[in-house]
Image (cartoon, rainbow, N blue to C red):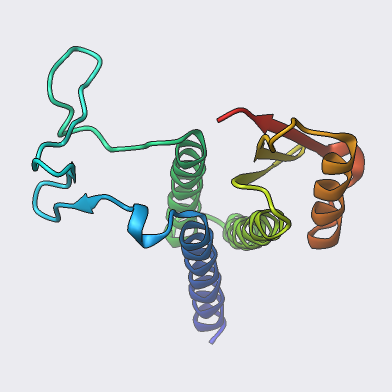
Length: 186
């Protein structure tokens, strides 16, 4: 009975993480008319001529490389990869029958923490974008939160920092001293 409950909790948490990541991705992408065509077979972003138009660093066609067009997309991808790696490690520890109950409980706790952080990050990103900023990526770490925001026209002001800090404080329990706001020129 207890194993069933734990598995149900882990499943719900994983579902929340997936929903949060999807929401973050869906709200952060360009409007449909600006999205180039995607070839589902080759995985290439196509221009009007059908070429990928992407050249790799060595001068060849970069058809095998993932297409990442902005700093913010790269940051989201990096965050997702790190979270997936952490989740895989925690799931492996949880599923291992040779580990103690304490290790399993710790793994469950860390998975819950990953899910909570993903939801908080998505909420902060959506709220900052709703306040009029073009792009935002929030990354919660062990020492606080880093929020990367596209620099507004005219540059970042103290009022901008105060607004973003207010959003972070309303969506989380992170102390002001642990908040880092970075403006990114795009």
